[in-house]
Amino acid sequence: MENDIIAYLSKYIPMTEELKEAIIKSEFVKRFRKGTLLLEEGMLSNECFFIIKGCLRCFYIKDGEERTTEFYTEEEAVTPSAYGQKIPSEYYIECIEDTIAGVGTPELETEIYRKFPQIESLNRALGEAIMAKFQDSFAGFKMASPEERYLNLLKTRPDLLQRAPQHQIASYLGIKPESLSRIRKRTMAKKN
Amino acid sequence: MQQSLFDFIEQYIILTEEEKKCITDLDIFRSVKKGTLLLSEGQCSRSSIFVLKGLIRTFYIVDGEEKTTEFYAEMEGISPPCVLSGLPSELYISCVEDAMISVSDPGMESEVFRKFPRFESLCRILSEQLLSKNQCNFDTYKTSSPEQRYLHLLKNRSDLLNRVPQHQLASYLGIKPQSLSRLRARLVKKKK
Image (cartoon, rainbow over the protein chains, first blue to last red):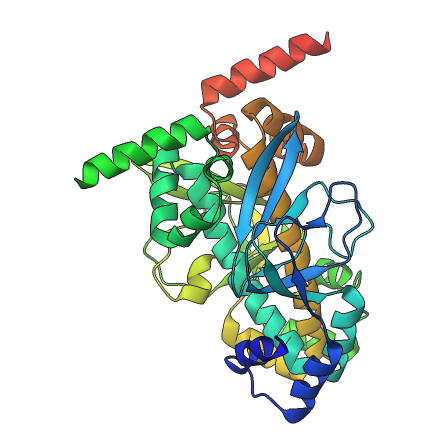
């Protein structure tokens, strides 16, 4: 499992024997069963995740209802908003599939950056890429109609439609499940 | 003006005289008038902007209408997506007030990080804080009604209410200006 992390990092930085060894020795890659809650509302967050295989869902509970805000899949990093801060999380993170992920903590990060500054450099660069993607995502959401959001999802993340239940996708798109059904029918009809 | 930047940085790391001189020599400070467009749709730009004093706004033009996505005030920064993508910008950036900003690009940043690795660490930390804050904003937007979004703004960024024209605020909250007026009137009534 650590080899997946090594393969991923090798795409961006020269991989040394020392770094390979440190990654393997750290044993920071863990397996989680579908349904596991990695973070809960009210908990302090001391873990961040890098998904090797699987899918995580972030959601809030508002007025007794689950509101899904994001899905994360392979080769995506998940840093909870409350990570490393002394404030409790406002939301949940759930594994919607059996998941294999690298698990980091603030202490582990500090140690890795100290020994391998090139990892901190990489983290900065990847962080900026995540930020840019995020800005596009937010802007897209704000400016698009529900149907446009669905079409955008179909175009950019079609795998999600197979991996997550329809009511969670609907919540993620900011609409009711019935509305999503209607949009999907309309979209299919337009194709034919 | 660089003193306010130094004060901001020194919340995180104490700068050496050499580091301060490096920043000063970069010649990154610009004074810009209210109404100036810092970035336009179609422009290819590698510039990231950090606001030292004043307020800037990001927006898109959709079907001839401005859709405001974010405001950046003192000690807040933005790297437009076009900086990383190298593609023409889809985003506009304009000055809501006369502003003092610092402008950087990836080439300059790489060189500074090479000379002073501590700056890269600092950038990583600031990026993470910014991403966390933005994630919270996006989550709030996704899971809240327009009234709840307005109340959230009132609580967390009340200064914007005095600094930004109402129609831009309305766009930012995802509602029409008339709806914002009605919402505000309703809330004033509730208070009494």
